[in-house]
Length: 506
Image 1: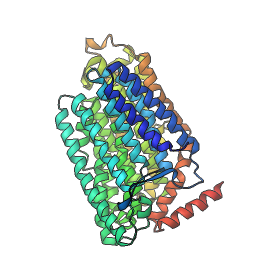
Image 2: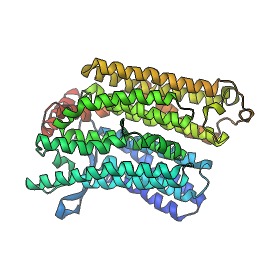
Image 3: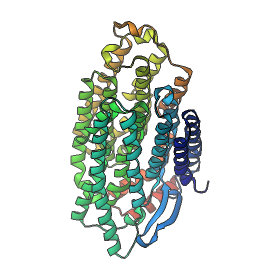
Image 4: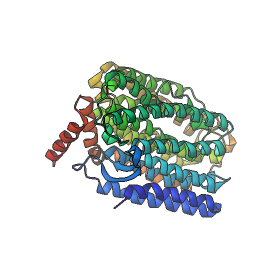
């Protein structure tokens, strides 16, 4: 389909603008229709992407600011395809979950959600560094309003903290982008295209500074320990839909930034920083799990679990081998599905009881058996039970990290055990503990609408757990290219080598 990526960006954007202009009931139809059309259109990426073809496909390039070499340049590789599909699958479920959870300014809530989707897809598809930065910053605006208007009691504190953290990192990245642009221009190439920047020869000392600037922006967004402190506040205060998108997609932007920019642009610096990043990743895995274990608020427990799970992503990514990087990217998708489902379920529980405190529940398995079964499946997915999606990603990450350091892998494996402890302990207390509160006696089970919201995620949990082959296959060329670059092969040669290898597999 011609201009498919532009359609995927502007369709939700237009739906969002229209949602602002109509009444609440109509805005629900507009936003849901726009999100469903975007999802259907995004399936063309999966259908049309050829792993044996060019690394970047569905490309579009139009002059934007030609005097400065800035263009409207879009394209996707296998990594981008999976990230965009994750975004487009989650958004209709978020829109459906807004009924009846969101009661005030519904049209504005849905409008900001759809604009956020457009910005997220644009970030994954941008091949021009200036365009990437525009979409990267644009994501902050909808999230700022979603938390600030529809959040909890301390929403203003959480909103300001979220905005300050991400803005500081983004400004450092902007400075680094300007420096790269100037270096490119001095070599006679006036271009902001990331594909042109891949061929730029950068001195080692400059790489170190550039990687630090990019890396800090991306580490904050992941969020890596110790830059994670904004996340629990943002998650707890955000509305359910905001938490789903924050955990499901926005946190992946940081890891995606490392893959697309920081690592291939500054490979020598990335290698130098690798030991530090791996140690911080393992600390984050264990720290997030231990702090999650101490929480008495279900939503805060899930929020800290994200710190732990994203530590696995960074561990696999900087293991710098095919197994680790593939596992990291696969785990990005898995975390979006599993943790997104957890936040949806916590939101459904909150709508019934208006509390998220674990001590307020108990014995719910007898009262809401269908809800309990769904919660059990999602819990098993989160802890990486074999047969569920979480197992595949964590297993590949641990295989990859073991090749780098058995000791770090042992520390990460401890996080797997701790993850099972805090998730199963929470599940036991909520679903099978003593039911001491009479308010739990008459809770309604999952409604038809809620089943429609959660069912697609259950299907994906099982599908990605038992049949990961097609998803890993679409990642293979992009992963091999990144590993080749980190092994010292220039980007242009890496692309040719991967093309030959993939062609030989056909």
